[in-house]
Length: 207
Ligand code: SF4
Image 1 (cartoon, rainbow, N blue to C red):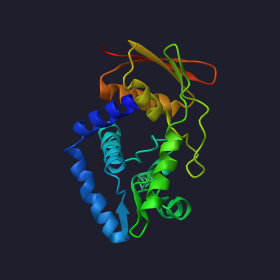
Image 2 (cartoon, rainbow, N blue to C red):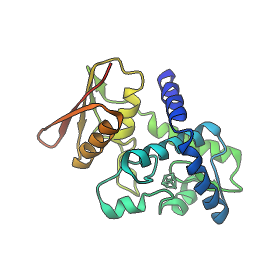
Image 3 (tube, protein in one colour):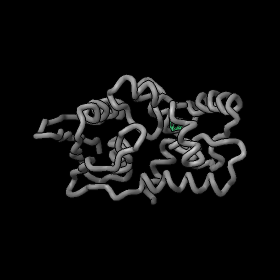
Image 4 (cartoon, protein in one colour):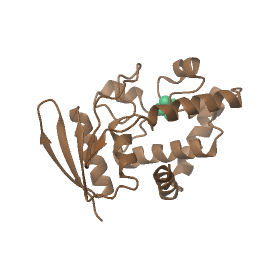
């Protein structure tokens, strides 16, 4: 929990200014569609920071919950606000990430959908002796992408991580590409070795 809070506040201060830009389009989008943004300050702040990080890292406003897939069509659909909003509101009460919901959604329903999301991201990580195996997570039924994705697993591992390096096992080529982009953005050393059906990446962390 403490590491999660460290990550939250470090992103909050880092993206405080950039988040204002997110707020402007979110406000317009909500007005146009009769939606509102998640009323929880922590949830909304976290999602806005993640949107800022996606833009800063990949140059595009990808969904804060799913890293780019490498499939151009799918990635286009996943730009926030994504193509799944209405469908997911019908199923969960809010969009997948619980950023948007109908203006008349009750407090209890906001809380339930936010909790659903947090539960999805609090699955135990497969981390042992400095090796994080990101494979085998459940797939989102609409996007066919893992929850939590590789990037969220790595980010939450790095919050408060004490080691000098971290090995990350990924399944998809695109995950290796994404991690390289993320490492460059964070000024972390990156090298990779191809295995049989997986890729092992070493992140050299500055201490
Ligand atoms: S699920 Fe919500 S936050 Fe994620 S891209 Fe879609 S609209 Fe944006």
